[in-house]
Amino acid sequence: MSYPGEPFPATVPKPASAQMELLSALSSSLLDCALFLDIDGTLLDLADMPDAIVVPPWLPTALDAASQRLGGALALVTGRALAYADELFSPFRFPIAGLHGAQLRRPDGKVAKAETTAAFEALKTDLRKETEGLEGVLVEDKGAAVAAHYRLAPERQAQVEPIMERLLSRAGANWTLQRGKMVLEIRPASADKGHAVEVFLSMPPFAGRRPIAIGDDVTDEAMFRVANRHGGHSVRVGSPSETAATLTLPSASAVRDLIAQFAV
Image (cartoon, rainbow, N blue to C red; front, top):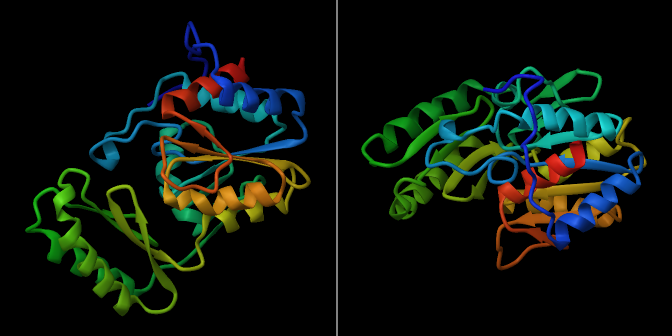
């Protein structure tokens, strides 16, 4: 974990063209922009297991500095549960849309979240039973969502997909199946990263600002479309074949470089 007051990197690489455009947009219009950031694969490098991701010691402090420069208009929009995201960036508490928006902490600190049901809890138990013999498959209980990761065994996708689709049919109309990078997740159907960004844009200090949305996965495409509609910037991390994003950055490291450049 990281602590306040830790230094930013001693040296920050010179920004590439996309980084320069974003840095210029952020720096020239501090009170006109709002920044929305995914976590896994965007701020932090992906890891083989969800709990194995590493937070650079300086990053939480840099995010807080960036948030202050933007007058508080910085939010994390993630598939992670809110409590886990808070642990990553402790002791800071940013506005967050967790579980793709099923959990949402407003800028004033108030939290709204989807509630689970007894039937959904039973579904999670059955998922663990049905995958326990599938080596390399990891079930992640997120509370109001549940994910089956197969990054350690990509060949398991063909076995995991029908299990998740069958369990989804039991969950009912209030739940949907979300596909991501080497993961399948059953989450509340009302949860959507694009809707979460729209909610933030309806309240101070985000209201009236142009959104800059940065993410790396198909789950982030919804917030890219919202950013585009509002005349902002949408940024896909990596090398996607298809995306609604208007800019790309090569890696999570490049995103961290952008935050470091902006925060100083």
